[in-house]
Amino acid sequence: MQTLLPDGWKAPIGYANGIAAPAGARIVFIAGQVGWNAQQVFESEELLPQFGQALRNILAVLAEAGGRPEHICRMTAYCCDKPGYLAVRKQLGAVWREHMGTHYPAMSMIFVSDLLDHPGKIELEATAAVPAA
Image 1 (tube, rainbow, N blue to C red):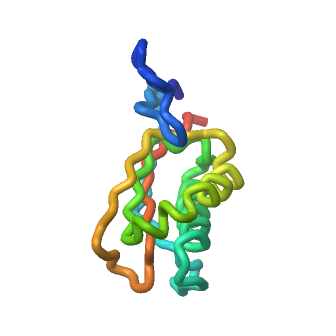
Image 2: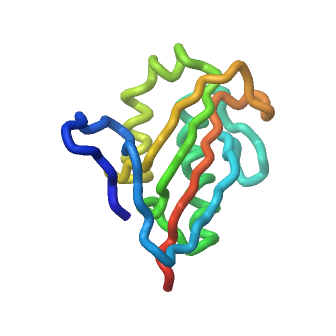
């Protein structure tokens, strides 16, 4: 994949402005994943552990398609706790690096009033381009 950064633009921190996927890659669309476990049980009502679990859920679905973290091209986060997000932003970065390393796809963070699955605080969805075998 190619990270896209137009000439003269300041490099973004924690995301890419754009990603170009290689021709022939298998495109994988991953539905919104919340911070519950495989049995759909929230083990925490706090944002930080929910983020880690939602990210692990994204990677588990991606692995079913033969993909790895570096194959994620785009991720959207929906969060219903902006003050909570800002309070743990640095720790969220550490959780990100634990699972994703230094790979940063094109990302959007959208703050919403609520999520369908209570007591969810964050939901992640992703698109990946898994290279042909």
